Image (cartoon, rainbow over all chains, first blue to last red; front, side, top):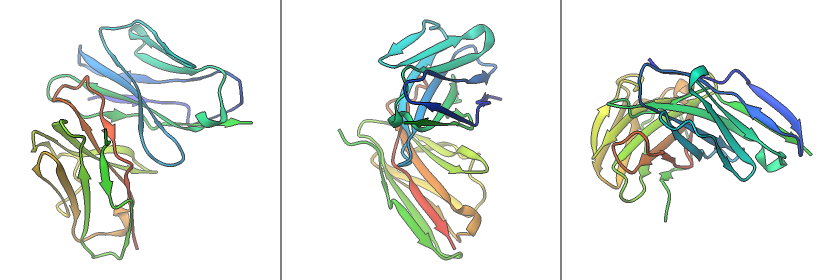
Length: 115
Length: 115
């Protein structure tokens, strides 16, 4: 069985602060894929990043960065210099290989960036 | 390119009525997924299709729920008869291939309220 845990239910920061959203996963697959999605107040789900289990190289995209640590089964997401527009619910998700095509989502972290 | 298109965006109906949610996946995508989002259960997969064929419907709550994909560009999720506990946001997503490293792209969702 697969499981994704986002222990932080809600986080509030002041604009320009850095913030890290935690994600811990469980899977028995040796090949798997990790994702982050953003759900702004308007409700849609926006794909942010995909990472496969063979690629532990960290990635940076503008103010966003992701830290994949296979040894601790974590895939954390950092927003640098947060902005009010970053306020959203962020979901970490996992999919396996083989027949397990579906995404298993974490419960999400509500991020509020205050002006 | 157009994203995943869902209709209607909002649906309010009385319990006992039949509800049909519609989805048009991104052209060329051959995997289609239906998810349900509630406060209590978060995002959960209901069913997914590969090449128009249902692969895993283990997430469908009960026989009142049914899904079809008559062709590559259209899918429906039907609830008959509807109950208040079916109230949720229903998302459709599609991905390019039957390969789990491809991200799923989500529609804007249908917010369903059963009175």
